[in-house]
Amino acid sequence: RVLVVGGGPAGLETAALAAERGHQVELWEAGDRLGGVLRTAANAPTYEDFGRFLDWQERRVHALGVEVHLGTTATPESVLAADADVVVVAAGSRPRLPGIPGEDLPFVHDVRAVLDGTAEVTGRVVVIAQDDHMAPLAVADHLAQRGHQVTVVYSTTGPAALLSRYTIGGILARLEHAGVALRFSEQIAEITPGRLHARKVYSQLPGVIDGVDSVVLACGGVPQGELLTELRGLHPQVHVVGDAFAPRRQIYATRQAYALVRSLD
Image (cartoon, rainbow, N blue to C red; front, side, top):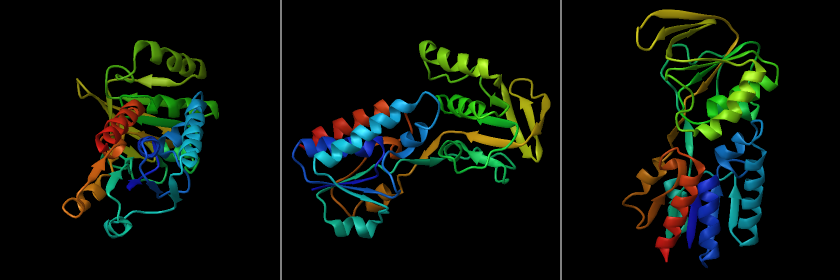
């Protein structure tokens, strides 16, 4: 009996693979839908295939007889009461805050809330990019398509260091056509109403970005592995996969799930 906590890409793949190998599988998801942060990413322009992939995964687990429970938050007590032989923590990640003064102001939003449509973004938008993958560029594309004037600020010398030169060209072309401005080698030192205070990374020369209506934080994620820590010593077989282990690309989550399920045999 396998209990998977979390219904994102890693949790879905773990549940499906375990069921395919004959294990009795139960999946708990705290939210009201499956897919995790990948479901959020599917709202960005050109990312529709992520949604289709998750729809396929959802059909897959149901067809395999996985017992899926939505709106179910796992606690150490509830997990132990489930009496599973194996517990897999696939609880994903939570947004990382960069620690910039003013990041708690009401016009500052996380990239996930923006793509989910739960953040009220207005006017000119600055995206603070502290993520070396696609998220800052994708949310900039999303906002530009909705008529916003968008600037993306990187502290690095270029965008999205983890993307290949073949992958990054398409999104950069879209942003250029949409009039999105990219600024490099700058750190945001403080967020204030209408203005961001910046400094150059190498020279430390100060600067400002004026006329800002909304700020979006695209700063990566922090693993939600607390349940794993709480269950250690209380359950003989507890494992962690996906972003709950380390926020990375989808392929790492699914490959990690594959390796784990093989080891259960």
